[in-house]
Image 1 (tube, one colour):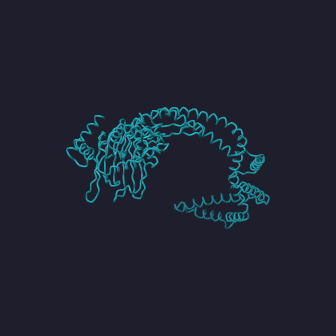
Image 2: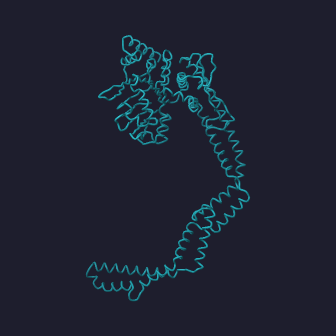
Image 3: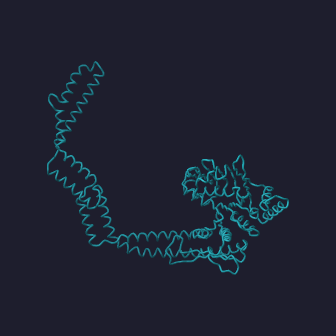
Length: 557
């Protein structure tokens, strides 16, 4: 249930704070007062797209917030818990629209994507505009209305599960068919390539080490010359680094006890002498281990050339040949089992399809039974909505030879006749716009589930009707809110009097700026507003008529 709506700098609204109650609330006011702006604000909070036209002139951003109270067991509360966005049974939505056209959204204080806001919005609010009935012509909406009001959720789940099992097997089969079996020649070629790689392939680590050693040998003469020069600097008898270090240490030692800094210098020179000795040993070891023989260099070049040849053959980098080897093994393994799996998967597919058809038939029976009840209920309501003699048929066609679908083997068709003596025909071809609106309302009332309902908002869906039909529309809108909440923007007094609450929207100009205000009407104020809606001006007669309409509606309620 929508408890609270806050609007800041949206359209022509500077600031509005609205509180709502359970039941049926009529939203009324003069044409152009801004009633539909409230509906648009809720639409943005449920994930509708926005642009800069939503921002009030002179403002930098528009900000919208709404608070919903959720019942235990509601789909919205389950969604919040699954996404770890729940806050007890409260849900706070917030949306900010900036002047650059970008918007941000929050659910219970956590930033979310527009997609997440839309997913939750679908579970919180249904908005029905003047053309909203057009959705009724789509199969998705038809299935939603039929299945949502039936008590066969387990059968829907069985069909979806069975379809998923069949689909996975079918996808596996197609993947096997796409990978055709190997010919004998292809198999022999793969086996040869596999043997060749297994016998000659170096691991990435081995290949890297081989390349490094080869580069070192290619510059071996330069390296030896450098090592020998460094060794002569360290080992020379009269002018070597080591000789000079030892001479400096001997000379300074006799003064070390007299000065701390001289002592530090002697210590550092000693360390340097030790390092020089270790460096000399390392250089000697490297020199003694250098093997620059032509035979060794030729062997390394042969191995490297072999690796590069393999890489060119398989169109891969030398370091990636290990992956090539793995793919060849996998291809040969699959080839060996491909025909066996193809033979085994056929009976599995046949059994899976049979399981699907069985549960789809059970779902069809449940749908057909529910559709018959809905058809009778909608036909009855059509008589109240000014379509006397009209009839409605929610037809469920079973197509057991059609490709499996997550929804089952059914195709829905809505047939209607709005006039007596006329055979029912397809809804999209027979009904006018006004009739579609009323038929849509009748279907929503007839298909209302016993489960926790959404907040439903109707934006002038009663346009173009009057008299007893208007009374019936008001009564039906009231019935939709018996276990939840319905809000209706209306210009019809006959609809407004059926509401549990009435909110008036007023527009005024102050300091050359438009202001929109709302207020919840008390008894006498409501009489005046109904009187205005009836005749446009207030009089004792119009007030008396308004009071009578309200009293009559309350008696029926």
